[in-house]
Amino acid sequence: MDIEMYLEPVSGKCLTNENIVEGTLGKTMTIYAKKDDFPDLNGVHIAIFGVSEDRGTADNIGCADAPDAIRRAFYTLFDHHEEIKIADIGNIIVGQELSDTYFAVNQVMTALFKNKILPIMLGGSQDLTYAMYKVYEYTGQLVNIVAIDPMFDLGDDTEEINSHSYLSHVIMHKPSYLFNYTNIGYQTYYVSKKSVELMKQLLFDSYRLGSMKANMELTEPLIRNGNILSIDMSAFRAADAPGVTNPSPNGFNGEDACRMTRYAGLSCKLSSLGIFEYNPHCDVNGQTAGLIAQMLWYFIDGFSARTNDFPTSENHEMFRHFYVQVSDIEEELEFLCHKMNGKWWMSFVLPGLDKPQKHYIPCSKEDYQQAMNDELPDHWWQFYQKLM
Image (cartoon, rainbow, N blue to C red; front, side, top):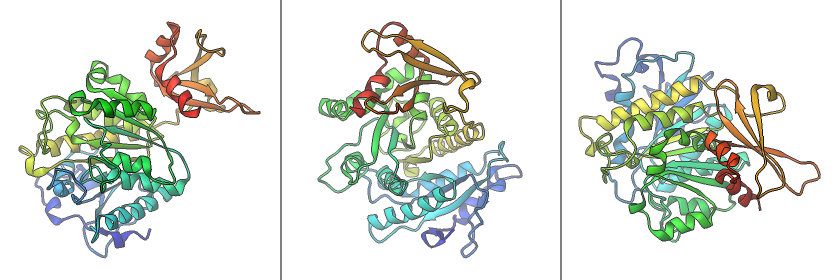
């Protein structure tokens, strides 16, 4: 895999922690630790790499130092999933221009995708999500981005890309292969009414912090529908994640963070993860680095339990099927619930085709109950609007 030219080894300072003992990830992982000794990635399932880049930040200078701070905490955790082969392939060599760094990210992630290796990016600032998105261009598939973020980061597409405007650049990128964007946990006092209305006009999904905190299980189908998960550490309350430049008294807590990354690990559709905006210079006793390390651990825990639970004609018998008639539409709504893991899906038949094509949309039991109350589930209606 010809990507060594874009990467530099992990700093030796990350490997001298006295807590890295037998059985910890620092001992069981494959780590690119010496120049000219790039590891063989055959058989690797997950590759972690850092991007020490903060030129695209709006207000978070210092987040470039995040990858190594996270590593020092991550390497000390015990490995309970030795069947999952993980490699830390070092840090992207920062380019002369920000666009050069984006290009290097593109080359590395493209190579990992081609070798069926899931990349985890440790940033850096969240504008790097745009670099992640552009990688999917070569696949020719439509992409769903899920962001755990207290804001929408729409900014202004006429200004240079930064961590508060990257989404506008994603939307305006040509050719467009963005099918959907989902925001989980936005905090209303941080976003304007205009931005909320724009999200609705674009038919994007956005969910307030309070509605998600009331039932964290509702985040599972939202994450399950994503190809990319982009996490802004500002989405977590300062008591649990103080290592950001603009800490908030409100947000998800540490348990929520680990729960959502485990959901991401479980999803067979999700193919890349990025964690951004952590600034070790603002951290308190490495608390935020420790939280991110545990989030990564739970992602791996979920990944180790992945099963091919997407509905197909071949695994039809693995699901319970429920049919509900809703007065607003002629056809019955079909819901499927996996017999083993309890995940819910809705089927959607594309209209206007000679041969009907059935699509499946991740949903929750609440969507089924909404249909039972003679109401069209929001997920079904939003998917229908996108296709129309």
